[in-house]
Length: 266
Image 1 (tube, helix red, strand yellow):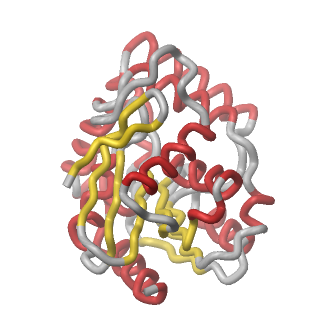
Image 2 (cartoon, one colour):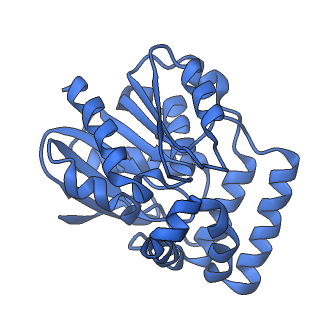
C-alpha cells in the first residue's frame, strides 16, 4: 500500500507492507525508497515502511530553495510514523539515511526503538569533502541528475557488483533520475553542512546493528567498526562482495543479518 503523508509544505510518498514490528527504512543520496526493494519484499515478519525523501520520487518538492535541512528530514520521519500510527520504530538508514537518523536521535529520541545503520558514518565532512560537494552541486545545476550519478557510480558499487550485476547499476541510475534538481542541490548542502555525530552515538541506549559492505569506499569497514564501538552493545557485520549499497548489492546476506536482529527484538 502506498499513501501520501502531509509533512509541512510537502506530501511524502510512503509505502507500507505487512504487520508486526515496525521498521522505517530511510534511503540515502541519490537514491529513493526502491533502494530497499529486497527488504520490503522479504522481511515478512516486520511491518515495513519506506518513503521517498522530500524532493525525491513520488514525494513533493518544497517551494523555494530552503526546504532542505537535517531537521526537516528528521521531522519528516516523525510525520511518517505519526501518519501510520507508530509511536516508536526500528530505524534503518543507509548513508545519508543514517545521518537523518542521528538527527532524529537528537530531536525525537523517544521514536527510536532500535537502529540499523548501513554503510554510514558519524563524522562530518572534511574540508576536501565539502569542496567535493560544491563541485557536485555545480555539476547538478549545470548538467542534471544523470551527470551526478555517473560521477558517483564508480565509488558506490563493489567491483564484483559492477562485473556481475549490471542491473544494479541500472537501478542506481533509475533512482538518481527520480530526484528533482532542488532535491539534489538541497541534499548536497545538507551533506556538506551536517554536524559530527560521534557524541550523539555515545549516548545511544537502544539495540543497534551496524552493517557495511566489504568494499565500501565511502564508509569503509574500519569506520563502521569504530562507529559500532561508540554504541554500547552494538553489533557490526561486514557484508562480503558489497560496496556502499550492501542491501541492494547483496540482499540475501544483508537480509539474514536484518532478520536475525529483528527476531531478537520481537
